Length: 88
Image 1 (cartoon, rainbow, N blue to C red):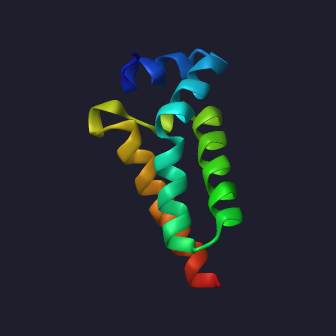
Image 2: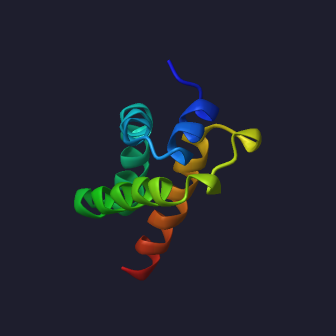
């Protein structure tokens, strides 16, 4: 199994399989947080999709030296979900 650092390196190299690996490993947690905070499955799906699209577009924004990929993604999901819940 790939470490978070290996997944990041593969993402930086443009390997689409790395995104699939990251999503398979962490997507359910990101979605779960988003649906719990927003109360909306549709909004949670959008948040999850946006976070993984951003990870693909800017993999350097995640630094494995600062923590786990799951923690980083869940933190971002919490923030985005709270912002959307606040607007609603």
